[in-house]
Image: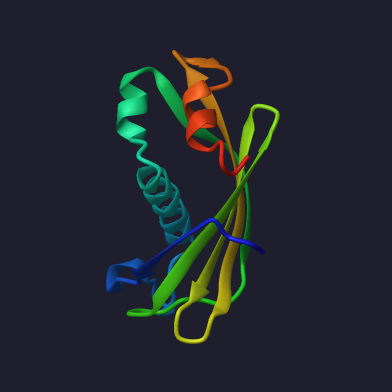
Length: 132
């Protein structure tokens, strides 16, 4: 897959469960943080858009857990983006940095609420215009 953004992170000990692997819910945090960093890289503030009444919210997710991450693993979180109607489709993959092993794959569908109503967001379209 071709990616348009990536960031590196490290597993913290409290993100692991009794089995010594990253608890499944933490991958969702990693994916969300990656999307927020992507926005910031485009000069867009998720918080500022919220203050304007524009909220991107998760509509649905398809998740695949491949190989577990463990405490202190460094990983690379990568994403790509498409638009389908009013939905933004984020394709997100997480790779263990030491060997580029795919650990997690997600397709995250987001929609926008503008002043509480489902709508297209010209602000997000403008921010993503180079990619959609």
